[in-house]
Length: 575
Image (cartoon, rainbow, N blue to C red; front, side, top):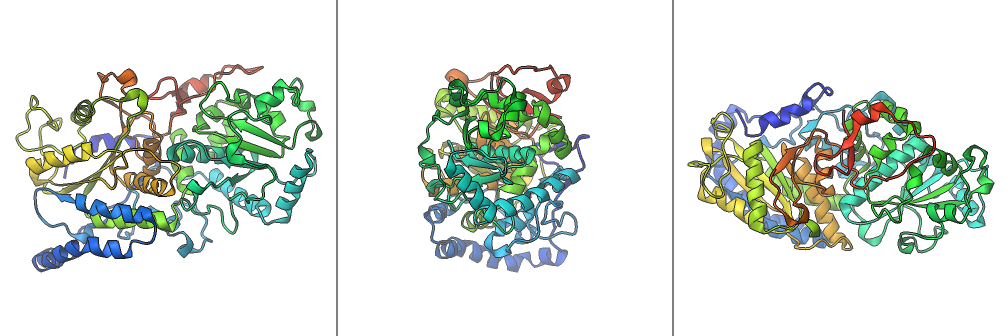
C-alpha cells in the first residue's frame, strides 16, 4: 500500500543509524467477517463516547475545554474503522517501555503513566542511546539523588549560599533553571540546560512557577527536581534580564576577573551567578560560551540560568564539550530526540488529555499526518495566502491525500503524487491540525467533505483546540499546548511552521525529520513554500556573536554546526 509522502519518511533511515518502526497489527480474518455486527456496536459506542469522555475526563478545566473537540470529528468517504487496528496494541517487535535503557525502571507506574506508556504511541525510534549516554544518565541520577532538596548535602549547599561566600568544600554544585517565554521555548531550554548539567556534573533544579505546575512528572528516580520555595535568592521570577549578579555585570564591576582563570579560586568568585542565555543580544551573557569563562564558572557553586533557546549546537562548538557530546550522541541529530524522551514526561492530567483524544479519534487510522501552523507578529499573512502555501507545500512534498478529479489549475487543489498512482488502497488517514485558529481546519475539512479522496482513502480531519491567542501564563492553556505537542509527535508525517519551537519539539519527540513551512518574513509570501529538514535537531535561533580568546577554527564544526533550514542566522546540528 503506497502512501503519499512515504518516500520522504524513508530518508530518515538513510545510513544514519539502526531504526525500528512500530508494526501495524492487522485485524484477524474472523474480526473482518464479524464486522457487520460489530459495526452496529461500534456506531453506538462512537455516539456515546463524547458523553462518557465528558463525564470521566477529570476535574481540570483543560480537560473540559477539550471535550468540545468531539464536535470536530469528521469522517469523510464513509466506512467504519476497526478499533483493533490501533497502533498502541503491544507487539513482539519494539516492546521496549524503557526506550533502549534510556529510562530507569524503578518508578511508581501510577504516579506518571506516560513514562512507561509513551513508547506505544511513537511511530519511530530511529536512534538507540549510546552506552556512554546511558552511563552518564545513571551517574547523573545517583548524583541528583545524593544532592537533591531534602538531603544533608543540599542543606549544606543552601547554608553556604546564605553565607554569601564561595567555598572549596562543596560536594554538590547546582544549576537552577528559570522558566522564560512560551512552553515550547521552555521545553527546549530545559532539555539543553540538562545537557549542560550532564557535561559539567551539576545538579539540575527547576524553579516551578504557577503556570509550570502539573505539566511534567519528576524525571529522576527517588527524588525531586523542584527547587524549594525557601530558596535563599528571593523573587526568582522578577530578577529581570540583567540583575546585579548577572555574569556580564559581575565582569564589568571586576567582581569576577578572567585574566588568568586557572588561578581563580572559589573564594574569589561569588556563591552564585545569574546567566542570561536568552535571545536578547543586548543582555546575553555571551562569554558563557568561552573556554576561559567556563573554567571560572566551574568554580561557582550555584548557577541560575535564564534562557529561552536550544543551546546544544553552541555547546558543541566549545572545545571542552565537543568530545563529550560526540561520545554521548554519536548521531548528532539525536540529542533532542533522546533527551526529550528521557526528561519530559507529561503528568497524568496531561497524559489523560492526550490518550483520551488519541484513542477516541486518531488510533484507528492507518496513517497520521500532523500539521502545525504558527504565524508570528513579524510574519503574518492573510489566511488565504497561508492556506495556499500549505497546499503548495503539500503538492511539492506529497503530504496530504489526493482528491478525485483534482486538476493542477484548480484553486485549492491538493496536488498529485509523483507517478500519478493512488496513495492507498482503501486505507484511512487522520489529519491532525494544531493551530491557534480554526480557519485551516475548516478549509481542509471542507475539501475532503466536498471531494472524495483517491483510491477510496477515508480521511478524517481533527483540531483539538483553537485558543486564538497564546496565554503562557495560564496553566490550562499550557496543558492543552503540551497535549498537542505530544499528539503531533505520534504522527507518521509532520508539516511544521518555520522557527517554531512547538514544531521543533514535535519532530524531536516523534523522531521524524519534518517538512517545514517557510516563514513569511516581512509579511511577504515566500516563493518556496517549504523545505524538507535534513536534521530533526532544533535550531538555536539566536546563537551568540562572540569572539573568545585563544579560539581556534575547527573544520569539523563547519560540517556539523550549520545554518538552519528555516532560519539561516540560526545554527543546528547535522550529521
